Every structure is written in C-alpha cells, then in structure tokens.
Image (tube, rainbow, N blue to C red; front, top):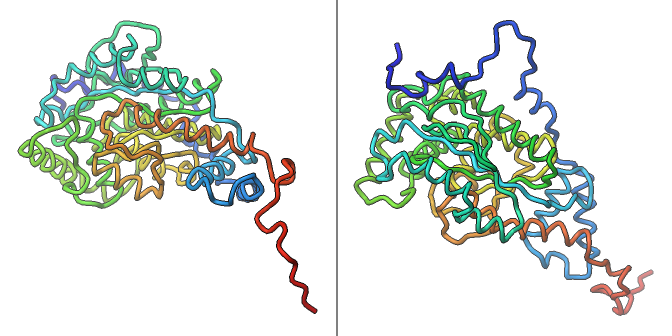
Length: 388
C-alpha cells in the first residue's frame, strides 16, 4: 500500500500515460534499439585515410582526429555531416531522496531554475548563445505544476521520484515512459533540423541518484563515486555516501540482476531515464550527442546497458569534478574533450566542447589534401633507395 504523501504514487495515473489494455502499440524502446547499428568500419577507415592526406603532419590534431573518425563511423560516411546546428535538451526532474538530507538546497530550486532557463538567465543560456545552440527545457518530473512557456516541453511523468531508500524510485512503467520521452525529444529535435544533440539536466539531489546508478552499473563502491554535488560539507558528504549505500543495499536484487530498466527504476531519476532514451534516439538517427557531466554519464551507462552500440553516438564533452563522472567515462571508454573542474550541470560543459566537436568534422570537409594544394608530403624530395 502506497503512502498518500508519495508524489510518484499519487500522480502516477495522471502523468504515467498508461496505454489502454489491448491497445496495439509499437514498443518504442525496442524499435529504437533495432535501428541502432554498429559503427561503419569502412567509413572510419576512409576518414583515417583522409586525415593522413590532409596538409598537416599525421596525428597532429590529436584527439580531434579520432573524434572525426568516430563520427564518420556513426554516420556511415566520410566525411560525416557537420554537427550543426546543435540543440540542448535540459531534462528537469525532482528526487524523493531529497528527503534524506543529501543537499542543503530546497527542492523548490528545481522549478525556480527551470524558470531561469526559460527566461534566458542561466549559464547554459549564456554558453548556448555563444555556441549558437538552441535550448529546450523538458519537464519530465518537476515536483510542481509549471505554466506553459516558450521553450518548455511539458512531458511530466510524475511529480518527482519516490525516495529510493524506502522503495523503488520509479515504477517500471514510469521508467519505461521516461526512456520513451527521451527518444521522442531526440526525434523531435532532429526533425526540427538539429544535427547535434547536447545533454542538459536540472534536479536538486540528482547527483545522489547519479552516484547510485554509477555504482550499480560499474560495480564501484559508493565512496568512490559519490561527490559533493552543489558543494556540501564533510558531514553531509559522509551522510550522502551512506544514503547511496543504503539505497543500493535495499535494491541489491535489481542491481545484481543488471536489467537496465530495473536499475533505472530502482535508483535512478526521471531525467536519467529520459537522458538514456535521448542517447538511444540520437544513435538510431546517427546524430552525435555531446554528453555533459555526472548526470549524463550515469544516463549513458544506462543507455549502453540497453544497447552497447549506442555508445558510438556519444562524445564526452568534459570531465566533471564529480568523482562519479570520471568513473563513468572511464567505464564507457570515452575521452573527455575539456577538463576545467566544472560541476554545474545544465549542459554547460558539453556546450564548451561543442566547437571542438564541430571543428573536428570541419577539418575533413574543408582542409586541403597535399595533392589538391600542391604541397609536398613528408617524404617528398628524399633520395629513392633502389635495391635489386
């Protein structure tokens, strides 16, 4: 029997968007996963060969060369399409674990920051304007009713999650619907013209859920993946680690079973599940998605667990100061492009990396080859050694 004070239980029927029994529907998650293909090896080989013929020493652009090769593999062609214009989706949701005192910030800040995003006053707005990216805010689970506004996508599934230390954070239906929502948002943004997607997030206490997800998907202990989030003191940090450990202990069976949707439902957030779907949607459409920090890292672990080939669409925009993020990108095998000790979220680190991703691809489109430019290659002019 659920408590009347449980926002997930109280509003599940209103926001869960359950389909009528017997309705003939396509499983959107399975359909999307079926559309995701492995990286195209021939396109990657062509991209490497083209890099070697450009008017620069081979390998001189370092990591950017590998980014261009990976995106060629994603697109199935070399050069890959330019990853522009870009669109940021800030998925916003609240967390029942907030009741455990894991942060000094009140839960109301989530809705207040959503209003700030929509008014254009947040850091993500400033960085997006600099990078020429559009910002949308997706209400997937804010614990307040939000008024309609330009830039707000109302996709509320519940008024926040339940407290993961007392039971599952989400019902299986809520977790599935959140993943589907992320897929739908990715499809909508690409249909509107976006050729690069950027993850954003907002939700007070979401680093606690992120730590639980990262521990669940990597097997690392809570103390290695639980950071200070918005900047908590030592006592609160120790308490936060204990909360993550308690949640993982309560949901040990789901974690050990390793079913991605079950893990998301047990200890994740509505925005984590939606971001996982966002990655799947991007991968199915062969559009790159630049990951932000620890929340995106946790979601990417879930997306890879759902479909390993989805990782081909992911670029790690930056390395967050949160220890869980370093663990996540290491486990994913991704190399962050920017390391500035950021821990803001919102999509800020990914936006700073966006010009690097775009530059990596533009090189393949616009830089001349040695032959076309009439520039001598490295070995030109060397005496030929003739052997019999």
